[in-house]
Image 1 (cartoon, rainbow, N blue to C red):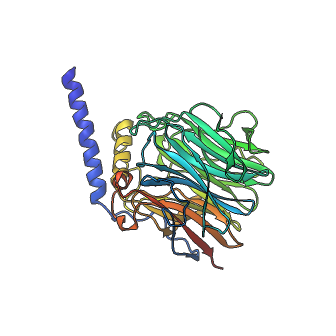
Image 2: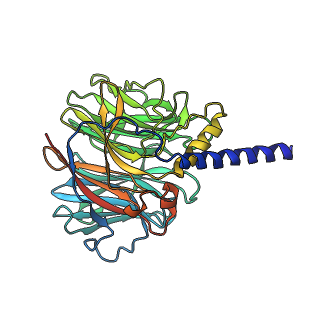
Image 3: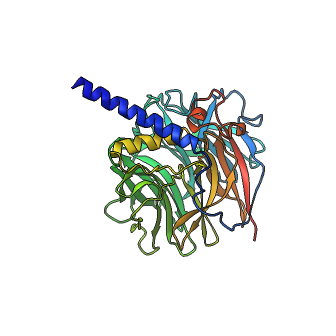
Length: 407
């Protein structure tokens, strides 16, 4: 019995090493996800925000500055971000909130959240007269994904925020918000994220009319998909139809990678999923609309698809090889367009980003201009594998960049 399990462990290890080495050795041999979209967009120079001399003094920042959100509220620009010793779970993780009266030229301290456990996915949303900060609390084990609860605090005045409150279901993770009309929409996920068996994660879709109380869009159940999907970015087109891009990292009967999803304006809970996943994965998907077009900002793998196609192997082996190989390849942040007719993701251009990168937040600043906040390893890490950036003592930093769409 011992010998059999020993051989099985050795075989798994060899699969991991072979998958990782193979995927790194084929750097550049795979074509990009799609042909470049014919979109004219001007990308400004990055303005470094965290760390920078413009920040409030004595924050005492650790090297890793990653998950982030920006929002406009009552004429001020707000930034919230996770700060920790490294990318992975840490009891030292904090979420800082700062605000600026002059679009980032100067910053003032607003708030800090620290619970003694990991904190992730901060999101600032201005809705129904409130500025709300949500996030989720995780565990302290850097090698585990342990979501515990969703947290929320509301700004009452300058540097004054309500006490943290727990909301939603235990273990639920909030991901993306969008407003349309007098409603605020939200995607969350809940389930066995990163388990070795096929994904059994619930992707949920809610709406709220006050930003505090949420209910399922469909009326009964908030679940729009059950499988390997966790994060799902979404946006509404000019007709009110929903478009979403999912992160199908855990895998299911559609494969591994991502889905482009559509739901009609008159039935927003009826998400239409393809029968097969696109093999490319778009981590941290954030979406926005410009005119009648839908755009996506997400992590890009310039080397290979996430799903390497080892379908002859058991599911758990496929999952391990895909995850390890993906971690051993460099990453970018990219701007994409959704081809609504073909229901595909089309690459437009890369934004500043290298190695450990891509968790964008976007706000509109004009009829054709958007401010994007993002994080990245040092830009000199262009060909450094993702995992190395996540543990590098150089850490990660946050920048702003302007996108200007040109007619």
